[in-house]
Each structure stands twice: as structure tokens, then as C-alpha cells.
Length: 70
Image (cartoon, one colour):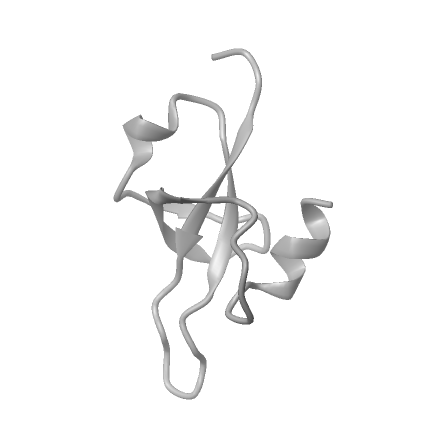
């Protein structure tokens, strides 16, 4: 895979912080990273999923990741 794609990843809730959807730049087939924890565009670790695609609609989306993928 020569180009990067952006995959959706779900973070874990920590204390008062809700679980959010994040964007992960993937330089290989997204199926290879399905279920793996990867570093997101905003710098947190989140579990990549192929069940949802980026951009994810909803209010539980990381605002930093959303801005960086526009």
C-alpha cells in the first residue's frame, strides 16, 4: 500500500473522559490493524476498527482528529 488511509479507532474511557472516536493514519491494509491499538492523529492510543469508517458521525468524535482530517 503506497498511500496512507485514515481509519476509525475507539479510545477507552478514562475517569471523567468519555470514549471517543479518533482518526488513525494507516500505511498498510486496515484489515491488518483491525483490533490493534494504534497512535491516533491527536496522540492517544485507540483500538482500530474496520466496522466503522472515518469520518464517524456523532457527538463522540475527537475534535482534534476531526480538524486534522479536513
